[in-house]
Image (cartoon, rainbow, N blue to C red):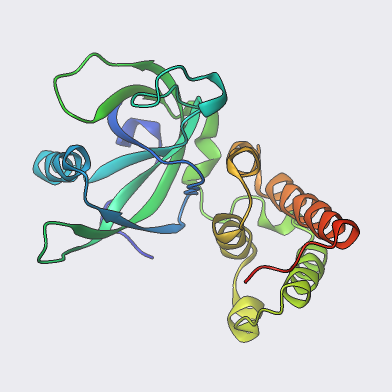
Length: 224
């Protein structure tokens, strides 16, 4: 989805951003993530993001394995900042919005703030290639990706818009499949932290193949 703001590099993004910890959520550059916002702290976060004009929210997973506080869990070090590109009011106090991914970031430190939501000082420089659309997509093994997708769909008796898939550029295809994949937080974090698009596609294929092999040997039923 095209966005009105142009982000050419880390200098175009704020150093301190609000963060939304959400397990299993994966946002990638130029990917779209729908969100249903209803908790007071995150309603405040959206309001402040719009008021401040940057319209940015950092999506990040809680690191549950290393957390002692369920109300304020530790965070993984890498997340992705997205811009609010669609927003609707539900009429019952919720926001229905869509984030478009801009760039991944590394948390430098969590700030002490008075807001209900959490804020972090972040660094984007490790992911400077995120600012270049379709970077490295020519290195993606598209056939291996489509083969794994076909096997997954067949095993789970699912249908898909093949015309849309075949026309999608490699970056859009890899990132969309990664974001929609039904895997757990650890796999989602590995997909997020992949150094490039080629590696992300390879991780996605490997995880899919392992999942299919596990279901085949265990006799687990397909996804419903």
